[in-house]
Image (cartoon, rainbow, N blue to C red):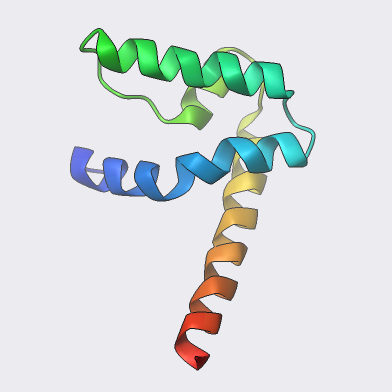
Length: 88
């Protein structure tokens, strides 16, 4: 996956990824806040931007299976939104 594709995916999923992970009770709001702060700090210090799921995984707060479940749920939501847009 190219950096450009990763950023496009990140821009599309990350704002909702954390919220969905909390709603699915995989992480707490406090863990989400810490992971978001970590993401921002890394970016500000010039490090390569990591996806929120990667940060949560590296902290052992989410498993790869949980990340996949969140991504699948987000994909289902996007499809529903796309169907609404196409039928309007």
